Amino acid sequence: MRSAIENRVSRRKFEKEPITGLEKENIISLINQLNEASGLTMAFMEDGSGAFGKLRKSYGLFTNVRSLILMKGKKDDKDLKEKIGYYGEALVLALTDLGLGTCWVGGTFDKDELPFDSGEELACVIVVGKVAAPSLTEKMVRSATHRKVKSMEERIISDQPFPQWIQNGMKAVLFAPSAKNTQKVMFRYENDTLSAEIANDYSMDLIDLGIAKKHFEIGAGGKFEFGNGGIFHLT
Image 1 (cartoon, rainbow, N blue to C red):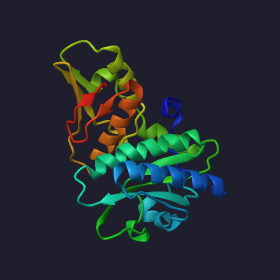
Image 2: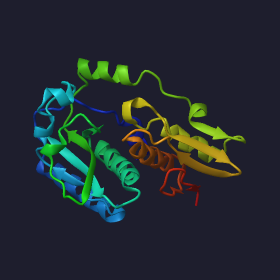
Image 3: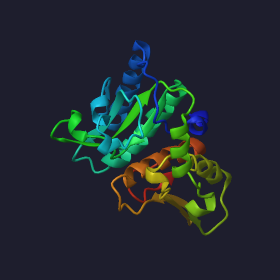
């Protein structure tokens, strides 16, 4: 997953060719494994293009969207959105290693076009498919939404020098996607304890928290507790 962190970019233009049967099997297998580990109910939808068929929602930013992963789980799971970010990013990185393109999508789709149970919350989707070289539109969107990557020092508060494992984790965090490229997740290293938190004043914030925690773990090793302000355990 370390190489996938650097190779992953959000893709909004897909080839018309659908994913193969083997790729579909691999995606469903990965989803099943992650659902079992997390308690989520993520699901693969081979043709969810109807959710992107209305210009008022997608503003023409997506091309040839077909297959989706529904990022959902039980409404009563107190860590639902963070788990969606954490396990969803693990899925995104695995799909990157398979050579597929992906993009997290929070609001620019028609939720009414997608199936989920009354006891579930559909927080967002991940679009997935075959990709070619980035189009001019994609390059323009990427340039507009990735004007600046915050430095490590802008993402962590500390009362002491960073040990190497924190530097390794933060380097991975700098590659983490975030809604509108806000990069809001902050890390705090005080009294030899590392935690991660976010303001949580936007619908995708806790998802971004889960994504950032997953990236940090891949870079540093160890494990984060779930929860806003959750503590990291190196061993």
